Length: 222
Image (cartoon, rainbow, N blue to C red; front, side, top):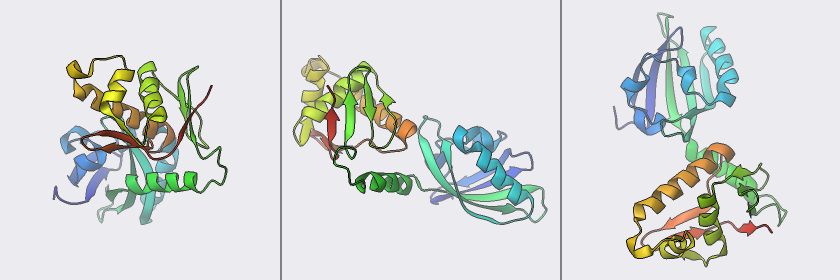
């Protein structure tokens, strides 16, 4: 069952997880035993809880709920976009639901909306120093740490592919003695922050063995 793309979840009438089989960890970021006995609403993104409970009411009334989408907060703090199909069990004392991770599709749709914006200015991401923020087009600013800003500044002013050495030097570190895992961790945290706060992918891809490439322009303000 662990090889399935979907997770099959059973909850009681109080909304507590009774069993989870299939792709639990890859979707939710938790082992099944970490979720069992916990109300499912505790894992739902705060902005999606009200309408999730409305969907629960429809299921409790006997309706088959298909293709309901909401967001869950994974164990590492990242956001999972999930599509659900759910119904009451035959004995009417449990709800049975199938969850599928559609995060890639949701993020791709958000990016398409950005790329379809005809404004040459608004289609750019903007990096500001005071205070340090990154502003996706059409979205509010995302606060940055000083280190986040330095990394993004190095990427924004660099060539098509910015080497790891260039970023480490921008951070004021000695490349020969720098632990490369620190940069990997920094990039993961930065990508997660943008996903959590903007629901978007950071427009930076990893070039294996070389560094990073910015595939959507980042404009530096000021």
